Image (cartoon, rainbow, N blue to C red; front, top):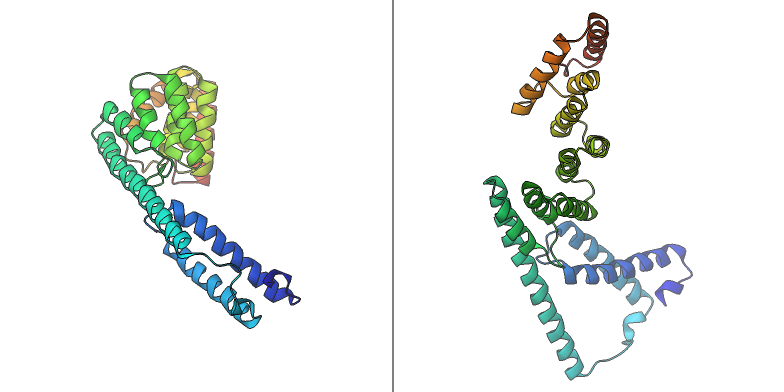
Length: 272
């Protein structure tokens, strides 16, 4: 009755309220504990408006249907058991995710594989830092040089969170270690498109260009990484680039230096 209201504004309010109530009910069954309180506020607003319209139109004067006490109690019991089961799965996932992070910090590939796999379930796929569990399992496989498994895990993780730049960079590393340099560069560029200041992807590009003996490209890529980066690899690849630059013939060397001068004038925050 509310959705057939002749007043277009009230009809839109009713539609929004009903859709919000149904969507939130479905969402709430899979989200425990309830973390996004801002959504609760929106729900209450829509619920209040829907109830107001319903009372105004007389929809609430009589129930649309009735349930026997047995059916009502059975429904409540079912929802309670379902909520407990889902909540337990999420809590178990959180605990194992924490252990996977600890294994990552301790450089323990076996631990990352074990706890990353244990954390994954239907109701838990990403931790509070938006890191997919496949990031940890992928690192475990990558450490064991199981490149096919690592690639599969990273790709699955990017299905969960396509903007997780560390997973993208590790997928690039997976290709780099297999000497699939074009694929590796594509992944590093993908990460940099999301976060242009992501120095790890920038330095990895420099490494790949050095492996391809594309020294000028390596130099240009290095110059795009902020010189304020405090990262051992920055000094390592920077030294290699400058060593190769010193060995270059005079003409291409001068052209490279001129290009660097132009880039530095445009953005003085960058430049080796």
